[in-house]
Image 1 (tube, rainbow, N blue to C red):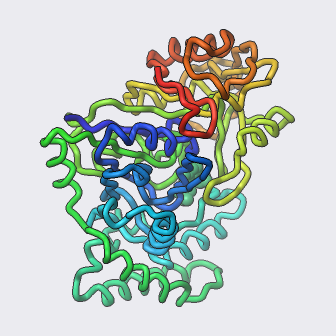
Image 2: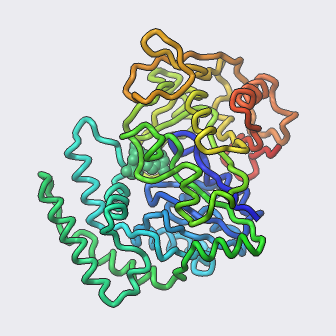
Image 3: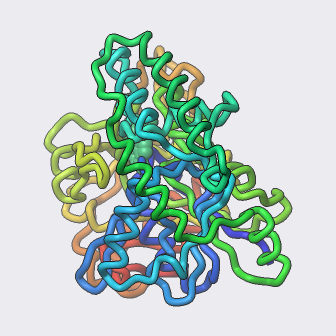
Length: 419
Ligand code: IMP
């Protein structure tokens, strides 16, 4: 059995949680491979809404095993509050979650470092979620990090203190006020709570499950345009959000990868700073934000909105080796007279069909216009959808060379068309 991967193709918030939840019934194992509590995967069903941060989106499915992989950075405090909220809803989290010993821990001082670093950047700040993601990955690659498995070590407290001291010495470079004891007691208590879960060598676990023929779905967070290598650097997150990130974040070989489900919104959004060629600053952009309820699931910040960017989408499809597309929030585009898609970038008077190295370049999108469409929320088959909408879908398929297999026409689990 191959491991299938689901990942975002834009700047995050594409609606991955909904698709994972939808597909989860066919996969006994769902594994998160990167990112941390900067993610906010929203799932809506039976009239209720849930936002998952570090926990894989298969958590609501009976019998599903949800693995937090080695590529994830885990904040025990967020993990605890997320688990407690789920437990209060009757979800047996301890039965359904396994945590990689090799996942790195986010400390309260990582969060402080994140805030101090962003404050020092002033106008050029990344717009980080301030969850300590960047500093935790810096400690990982700097070979200073603490991992989940370390909490079982006898000298854990000494190692923690060593890392905290290192953080305090870095913080001295910043003109930043903080309380060194912030959240320490709550964090240690959350570590104790976390010890009630099963820690595993997830690379052995996943490879063994694949060998036995178990379906494994690897769940990405953020999106390809936020990837540390291929995103709009430096306005990116600190992990590998691309397909290859599933291999390093779970310990599976590229030979083991099967389907790659690429998730994109029918338009584009972005939170935080950084280039966004198709961004709309007018009433249309405002309407997309209002209709799509485009506010960060984690930070509640208003998301920037714009038309679909096919140049960026095709780039993401290439980098990720996408085999099937899922188009989300198609219903949000209902009611517009005309719908636009960027098919090229004009830079310095010349047209380009690739994402430029210089992400600061003045980019003017070259648009193709489509006729708008009416309500889609009650559609139950592809055939019953308006012809102008189908023209939009089929244009995307022709441009990317990948079939759009899932179309979401509303927030509920049931408002999904699978082709
Ligand atoms: P960080 O990963 O929190 O440091 O944030 C780095 C950049 O990625 C910022 O622009 C964030 O807004 C963005 N970002 C991080 N996580 C997400 C996400 O889950 N969805 C959308 N944007 C995100």
